[in-house]
Image (cartoon, rainbow, N blue to C red):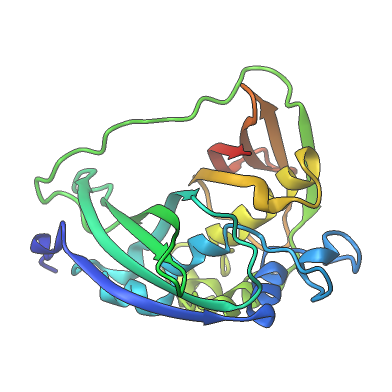
Length: 282
């Protein structure tokens, strides 16, 4: 395939997303809330409903957005690499209409055998035109490297060389990816066993944003329980595929005031599924 490099710097959208409490609950269920019928019930029960803030990051990964941002890559090798979402207003309204514009900021070349990274910037406004959040999202296209493009600048969140200050362990239910995809990420690597094996996995993998939702809940539980709207930034890299049925542990390190670094490791294998994570809050 020939990459459409002329798309770099162009803006797409707006993509309009209407939501209500049911959409927020489905997203929260897709991030593991309420799996035991009581933990984080505020995310999945409409009475005093709270919002997992990275619901906003999901908008940049919605099916219609991904299709519009297709710059000619091979979809069989497309995976979410990471994201950095900054909130300018707390996400607290349980229904509304959001408008998102997206720009392909750059395509970084990792070489002919390593693919390329596509950096997108999505900005979301409410129905009154007020800016709510900006999300820099990166996808890796593993079959589309070697075109002579620029190299990605290395900016990494350091994980301290000491025991974490907090650690939260949770089992990922076997049907977790099937629940999460109801929020609009229909990519078949998360549901189709034959397709997942074709892509080199032993079975369908969990969405990186779902795993990030688990981490977001764990960090909120540990540091400011019941107040997810305090989060002003959530940044993370997705570093290894995660199979539903695994047990994860979110490891959290307190840094400077109102900042933590984190990662999500496999409790059985030690593999880091999310790494170089950072959360800031008010």
